[in-house]
Amino acid sequence: DTLADTLRAQIEGRKLGIVQEGVRRTPLLLRGSSMPTSLSTLQIALPDGQRVPLSAVASLKAVEGAVSISRERGQRFSVVRSNVEGRDLVGFVEEAKRAVTEKVSLPSGYFLEWGGQFENQQRAAARLAVVIPVALCLIFLLLFSTFQSVRQALLVLANVPLALIGGIYGVWLSGEYLSVSASVGFISLLGIAVLNGVVMVSYFNQLRALGMPMDEVVVHGALRRLRPVLMTAGIAAFGLIPLLYATGPGSEIQRPLAVVGVGGLCTSTLLTLVLLPILYRRYGEGGMENRSVKSRLDATEE
Image (cartoon, rainbow, N blue to C red; front, side, top):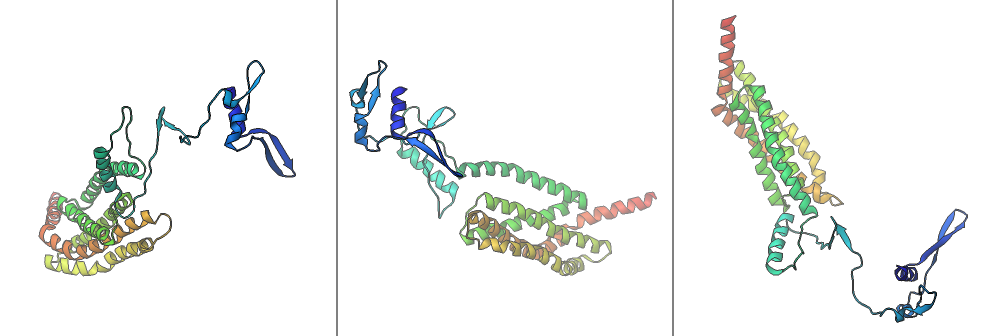
């Protein structure tokens, strides 16, 4: 320990005190010469009080060694870092794993762990795999409680894959990659796509309750709900446009989310106005019939 302390004081210095000049405080260090050759003549104090040069008790030579030693969970580890550009992170890591497995033979007691953004993305993907089905189930229950019809609830949920088509196409067209932020964009599409479907189906049901023929319901209802649906999707899409052109720090997170949102809103809105009326005309009558029968039964009981 005495030898180590002496060498540390020679190389790093030893704090003797602080020199104060007004409000300025300057540490006072005592340090030996920075020349490597001077270390061999460094005098080392022995327990009996004698002093001998360092070269008498140790041999000095220049070797390459670790600048620092890091530990985690009581084990030493070394970090190899890389930045991924121009391709998706998950695909790069999977390819790197295969290459390391084929070409690198680890000594006994050594092991590899893949972390960083890839590890965070894997954890987020695992959470989303649970959150998305739960969200869809809750949305379906709310739709069923609103329309009292499984068929009409499924018609509204049919907007979700229509929105996903636009989001996936937007990611492919822009050259982005599926990431956590893109997954968040897909989740945000669920709400807007379902909202547009609820607006359309609710108005169709109102017209049917007034006794309007089905053909007139889908045509008149789609025309009357055109403006609200376009306003809802347009405002959301215009709000995402600044994120599409972001170039500063954080743009790698903002752009995928905006691309998915804008692409999904475009296809969801167009297909909602065109395809949903057709599906309602073919499959949406069940809910109205059930409510009509229930109304007649209630009237009979009264």
